Image (cartoon, rainbow, N blue to C red; front, side):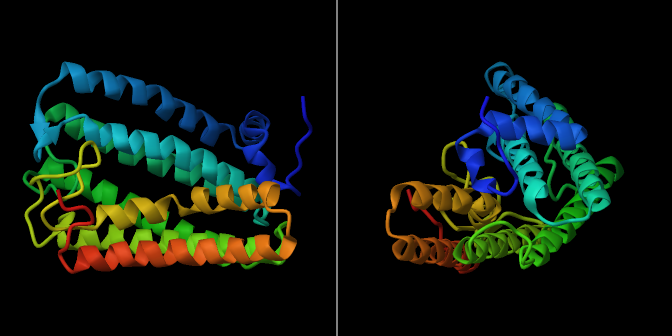
Length: 277
């Protein structure tokens, strides 16, 4: 087995299983929460083919499936960042535990509402629905605060990456904050779409509106910047021989990705569909 070191965080893309083992060792609750979401994803996918009910125009189990996939990827990603970001040891344990509980509670609401055949988001139709939506609102607020903490911590000089890689990671976290803002805006306005009513025509599976603006696109893209940008850093580190070129590409890609996320957000705010079918 190859030995991995938190002094070389990008080696996760070469030795993912070893890094997952280290996450399991340091943050077992987070690790098993991710495993749980991974397993339940298959159940949700199976439910799509068994349960034909629809919510806002799509199969009731598509939303849980999307959230479950995003959740286990997100949890393991956060575990990776916690290994090499210079948080205090107790802070790392608290963040891992709180985020795991928050993700569990959010997905429990989404699955419960899918089982009941009603909307999980923006649903205030009954006191029970309102209570579940309030739980999700609290979860969103906690997630946003912790993600902002990660962004602040990304400016630490103790992170074991080159200066261009550090800036690329910081920009990735900034893109995630744009995603968080889009998410909070959806919660505030009580809808995903702008210019059209939720539940209209949408892209397959993703269900982003093809008739009007949809804030979910920017939310999705920004949320996954913290995985996409590091993957690009790993690629340049292994494929680009010129150190100067690699540094330029790293910064350039991160900036372009941030601009892309902001542009997708602006397009949605203008009520324009990202893809018009």
